[in-house]
Image (cartoon, rainbow, N blue to C red):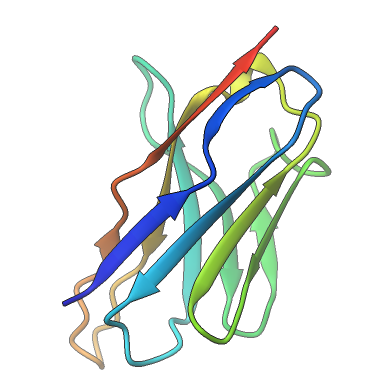
Length: 118
């Protein structure tokens, strides 16, 4: 049974930092990609950052230079968020895309709230 569990969210002042973690269990392979998404109130869910199994990372323009995504060999996923802004306030979700060859449908975490006060 696949389970993604995020942690590390909370309330922080603008300019502060937070580190999100996502523990992915029940996945017996190293996913080609692991992603962080976020969804602000009244907005669509958006891709924040993505990292390949080889460590190549891509970021949304809005977070480039402030956020760093990383992962380890145990399928732990992290998001270090520095210089947080009020517009970063959202629920942050960990996502593992589906893998057709491995018959893996993909999985979402339950989300962790990040609130940045100005």
